[in-house]
Length: 457
Ligand SMILES: Cc1ncc(COP(=O)(O)O)c(C=O)c1O
Image (cartoon, rainbow, N blue to C red; front, side):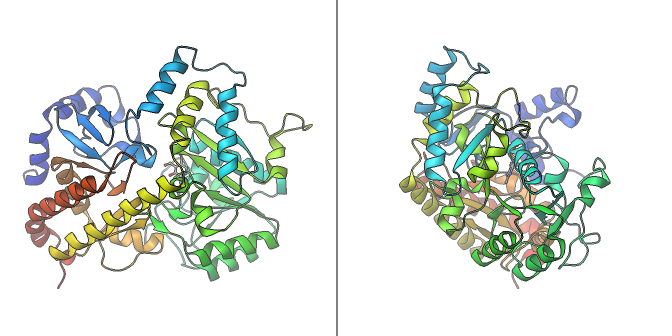
């Protein structure tokens, strides 16, 4: 069987990216050095970006709804960030010494995020969630961590347990199995992780009660990002808040993605205060960053004035360049900016859903605020198992939609995740809606042949 015509069309569209990919396989396994940024047949290679547009190596201008997995709140080459970085790089990039810029960004974040009384910078979101776990273990003397089924907290084993709850292995809904994502997971990590179904307050409470004596922390994203931008209900998070408080378990909100939803993150919108908050992505202004913040007595465990502080070294944490970029980005992202971006996100979801209806396809755009994901289902999706079922139903159509949208000038994550950035306005949303309309016109004949279950009756 020959190649799918829509994949062949993508190849025709992107010959220079294809040539780069052929070179890349000689250097990088499978041509890839970042799992989340790879897709088949090969990813589009980018030459430059400015505002909300990127230019690929074949010269196409594409509106970027990927924003480096939601981290570029101001898009590319945002002038205040460029100025701040140029100014700073000329003065050096990293000193292994404190700087005023570190303090300024830290003060800004502490003043905005309700749970953050004190904080520390890390070099990535991954390192931030790792430090949250170590802080919680040190604070409680307990070892086990509860995380959500389908939750993602970075690139290490515990942070990925049951990221993909495969139907034949996932176990009972009320007490999901701890699943490895790949063959690298030690069983000790699986044994130390309690997996909780998302948006199920009753089951969550039962699991916390059953494991309270061993639980150091409950780790939760206010929106299940990797599984298709599934917002948590307030009731669910409130149940976690109350049950963890009863047993002195540290409640950790991973706001690495959701911080953008208001000037103080999802927690401010929800009015629920966790003990620790993990941050990352937008606070670095486009440079690598992460952070952990929270209750002063918990953060105090890192203090060098402790007899045996929780150890956190990290060569590039709080480096001068990232601090300069982060401060420029965050001081230009205030409450009113988040409201505007959230409205654009609403408009995008509403418009996408109208296009799917027009073409009679069972797909929906979901999410909240400036964060959106398309899933192939006509039912609301509230947990990871439902999301995975819709991904299985969507099959290769997800990839075809993604590749065809690229040809029509819209970049998203290959799992169809879209985020809005501040250089965007309604015209960019309209551009995306038009691109989806054109994409569906091309795709529907193939859906009818290859996945007729996705067509509305
Ligand atoms: C919710 C969440 N937590 C943590 C991380 C890890 O952050 P980083 O990739 O900066 O290590 C991510 C990354 O996508 C994330 O989405």
